[in-house]
Image 1 (cartoon, rainbow, N blue to C red):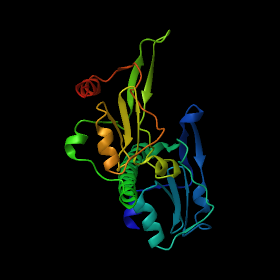
Image 2 (image 1 turned 90 degrees about the vertical axis):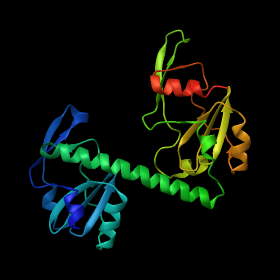
Image 3 (image 1 turned 60 degrees about the vertical axis):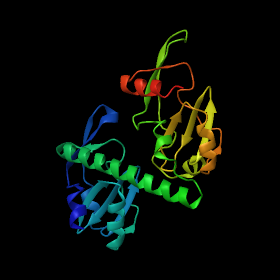
Length: 240
């Protein structure tokens, strides 16, 4: 528990919470008064877990390690409130909270990748040779911003990876699937990443590895210009 407490924010009585969604409204919070009632319990909301330990109230971003630690120490799920789960943050510990959230984000990505690979192995969705993957573009988590130049009013839009980093029903339905549109092939690789190719011969390789055709979105299949120069150059290099 010592490590978990260290990687949490203690919500002492009167702590100032900032709510960016309400024009940075500030409010005193006194949930610590509930700690004795909820001692040994935890609850989650969005990406935050709240727990009460030794009559203190704590919050930390959800990670595999945090939940495993709580369960291993006998904590049970309760109906305690979960502060810091809707963009709000502790005014005097903002830097720490931001750092914890960033670390948790990376943990969730790693967990998602592991879960996708495990699922793929169980369902016969195989890996592709490096030389084939080398001819593909992996969509970055931040997405790919493009410009629709031929529209009456040119506008920018960002294409994001098809899957969110959560192995839910939607993810399960799309892992190991591919689709083609206007010479662009999109497929969800065995690790959950959205991959794009411009050589239709890859379809035979995908089928051989257990991938199936499905009606998934095919980013960059329209007449658009990629804004990021590095991604633009990489995409241009893949054209046959």
